[in-house]
Image (cartoon, rainbow over all chains, first blue to last red):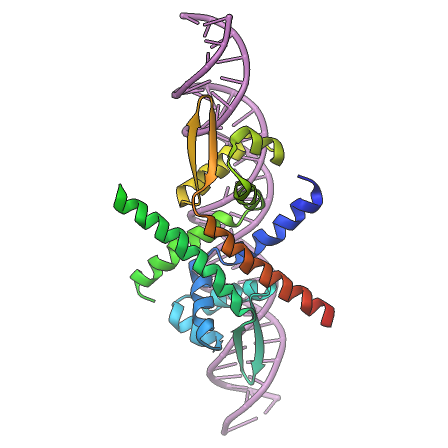
Length: 104
Length: 104
DNA sequence: AGCTTACTTGGCTAAATTGCCAAGTAGGAG
DNA sequence: CTCCTACTTGGCAATTTAGCCAAGTAAGCT
């Protein structure tokens, strides 16, 4: 694997890594319904606001979400709605696993 | 977020985590072309065979790939071809990011 | 049986991730 | 300006992940 190809996979892995956490998956699901400010998400998640903020900035850095300041609030929204397409792939994996369970 | 919902996101996060590594992404891409034995993948990747084996067993555990012994060789194959659907989602994210770069 | 190839697993260290607290910034209200 | 709310960032400890080597297993060959 040459270094160019490797770099290509590194970038893609970064996108997967940004979604490889239950809290961040929840955020994406919730933002798919509409924009939310940090404190709304914090309340739903039940973690420290600093923790929530860090998860959001990770998603932002990767380019999954974007933010906008409105007065004292910062609202986040999904930047790429088609990220939900990836979620369907996950369901496919889980359903296949579930089917196999039944058979066994 | 109740514990049942949380558990649901944990499972999904596990699937993403299994793909959150350049080597494992390469493996999935390569297995999408056809089945491969561990030593073939090892040569392409250029890491220790034990490292490659561990990546493969992680993918197997999550249910992305399956293996089969053939003599001294163990061949791996994609168990869920529709996992490639997730890759398209990644491309969408990256392309959106690229477009934004141009604009800026 | 012994030898060899193909692979897995255990163990260890190095590096990355996570989550909380504390401290800092930003903007509205009085 | 001060206070307050909303949020971000730094820092630290705990957990997880990654990669190599060494040791173990599995199956074919002689």
